[in-house]
Amino acid sequence: MNQIPKGWQDFLWEQFPEGSRIRLREMKNDPDPVPPGSMGTLQYIDDAGTFHIQFDNGRELGVILGEDSFTVLPPPTQTLKLYMPMTVDVFEANEWGDMEAEPFVLDSHDAVEYAPKVIAALQNERTPEEAERGMMTYYHEDDGVNRKVQSYVFTAEARDGRLWGVAECKVQGQLTPEELEKLIDNVSGQASDGFGEGFEQRPIENSRTMEVYAHLWHDGDDWTIMTEQDRFDPKFSEKLPDMCYSTLPSDGSLILIKRGESGYFQTEWSQDDPARNRRTADYLNQKRGISKEQEAAMSFGSLFGWDKPGADPKVYMQQPQQEQGGMNFA
Image (cartoon, rainbow, N blue to C red; front, side, top):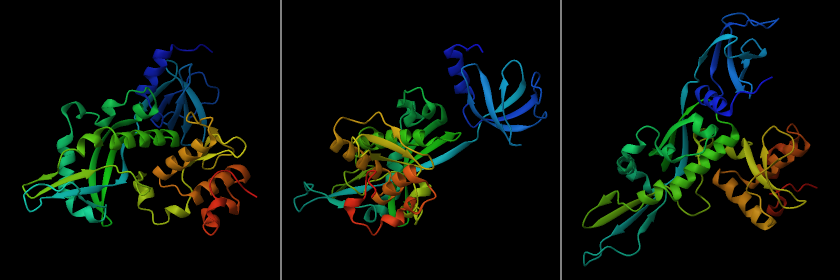
């Protein structure tokens, strides 16, 4: 089977992302075609230009552009929200009218009263260049994240008595776990060193007696970035995340574990230093709100089966800390 030019293949991927809906009109050369009018979901487009479709009737078939007749309906755009706790610094004037050198630091609970001003300030921070794609304006990789995430902007919400920074993402199709991790990493970078770094240097309130600054990111173990579903699930700590990081006991390399899949996956961030890999795994897991107990359960499931008791985080909640983290099982 002949391959199509890579430029044409990239064009097809961009125009018809994974998750697009397909309505079949006619299959000309298949001895056992699906009926005209059948609906299905695009899984992928191979390097020969064949559209591989999971039809709603359970069949999986490939249709060929220019040979078979079908209509592609782009997947609907959905809103994905990523939540991160915010803090606020309040500088007050002293008796001489000068601002104190050290602020009162308000955590996300105490800062909730500033939500309206934070939201307005975040909106004012946006530039005309970001009108169409928001922070994705600065995302230059040619990958699934760029194709699926149409835009994302920063805003804030007061919810459950806390002030949350929110990356509001418009997504077309379904992000894979790897794509979600890559998006979260990009949002984290913008919150800490990009957009957020500039935002936190401009006051959201400025008067002769007070200056107030808001932070999307802060250095601390309590700063995490999570999807709305995970963030506000009261039993999240008892469940398995879609993926997590760990280290191999044999050589200390950094690995990726995917829920429901056997074994592990190598990562591009692994170094020759096992201790550094362990710190990286802890940092990446902590950023996603993933506990040591969840990592231990994920490690067990990937090795011994996801239907075994050891793949339940609650098993490890009463165990000593040194028995958790990494793929270490008696």
